[in-house]
Length: 522
Image 1 (spheres, one colour):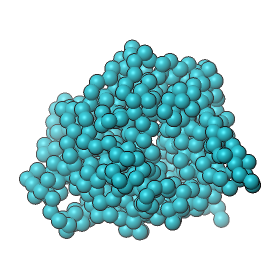
Image 2: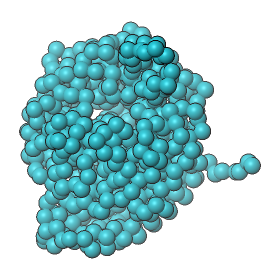
Image 3: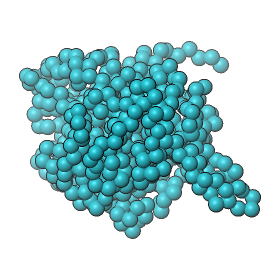
């Protein structure tokens, strides 16, 4: 039966109003849950985890949508690998009970397990590139499909324009003009063969591709590289660490230390920088924590800050030493600009060296500090994602792994608690008025709150999988004059802040944030 649907932006506005209303209710609901548990006097220093909650699937990949919900996929409802049958939409404003989740059938015939993902800036839809495929009953090959998740209809749609190359574990980078670049991914896996199934060789997809806004693709044949995003470089094909740099090209941080610049004009041009950073792993997290600045955790508990704002060589400096080796852990930029690192194990995807204590890294002081302890191991195929209320969802792990983690936890950072050591939630300011339509770069806009505004921050909504959230980035917006109405300015250009959706947080004098207003910049 045909059903008339409102245009996406109208639906988005309606959903947004519902989301904010429910979010205000939820903050009170969550407060009662946390207060009912054991008091944590250090919550204002270390933060606190909420109770464990169930998930209908293992959330191997998660994307925050512009309406505040989370699109997730990765396994079936028993925690078995595969995104060909189900995906889930979670509404955090409804809490964490079963009625907050909607699990839907994937009718595209694409297994989106371990695909690449990003947000489409103009529509607020999720772009899903490639994924898994079975050949002669064996999984972990690849496909070249392109799918789009539409939050207005909650449907996953297969596109007619495929990529030229099959990609499993690829990265999708959002460009300043709204295009997307697919980097890396495996094409075929090694299999020795047996009496009934022929052998196959491992092959990869070292040629980047550009998806234009109209959905057509072109290959960057002149930028082919096995070292930057192919078979070499410590499995460079495995979710290449790529971000748009402040000059409009793509910066790539190699798993084993080299750094590259990719120019996507014409047939493409890849340049390797002369300097590198300490060796890393493809299972260690990296995240852009400030404009043109990346925190990367390397081997042997070394952390490095890489500054790519200049026109010459990137500038690498020590970012201190985390307390743990977070292999398969996550790094999440918080609403205040600090980075929260959680999960992982010092021994890989095993429980032998599992890490339950999370950590906070402060880019101002360059100091790592212990944070709250989780209840569950978060290893291979776990994720973490900043939510509009300033908390962080962390969940998943398994498929494969020592434990199938069909569950999640919510981490409440220190800024949500009273500073008196009571372990109680602090009173939160509320945004009364802010832009509700798309605004441009370098544009002034006003914010009104129910209390004096002391600080304004902006965080791009995230898309996380396999220890990597390449979409997120953080901005501190200058507040020239404090008051309940302030005027701030959006980031200067699309190279610094790629088009898309951003969470706007205001902060009161007690250093407590509001629930975010989601802005569309572009």
